[in-house]
Image (cartoon, rainbow, N blue to C red):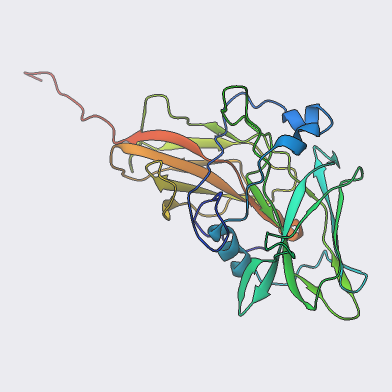
Length: 286
């Protein structure tokens, strides 16, 4: 089973720089991704979000072998991406390679991250690879409305395969993974949500097609960096009760998705205002 997800956040900067973060908000209701609704033609004009520093740290954290892997041609990595159980054409994945215990982005001849796009069958392929241990990273393309506002994608915010090995005699074929995801449900940021050790607050999220267990993470304020201030235990249920005293503040929360041998992903983030319950008042003379 895959291990816990590191807490740093996705970024639009180069993977090695740890630069500004780009948080894709999940709102309700979730609308179909425009690229899926239009034969994924929107991918051509989308903005590719490069792997982030937290992405590379996560990749280093999960180094156990994957029992679902199959062999491929030497120097080759293959796999398939699904959306709602069907082949997803036009998705983009990048490649990470393990170096000195850490996974870093593989770069092409132009110095940019090496990427591959899925074909009509949802298949992707990387060829001409040297021997080593690799992972595939999926980050959705940002699609914006006419006002420049990022639209809900209906997809996970990221997905990683488990590590796979390429040698001089064989490559790796990763298990297919499904990137469709309806996102976070409750709570959202409108108004204060009271919570304490005696006043629990429920959190709810959608189930993931291959999700075996989930982990709620809460980050202090809505900044683009930092570690979670609260991280609940793994659970197979798409909900959790938060029983913890908090300071009155704005927070963000997301869910780590453990997909077993298909890998591990993250939901998009949602902002929420948390506060301790107001003190009870006792009428005079009672």
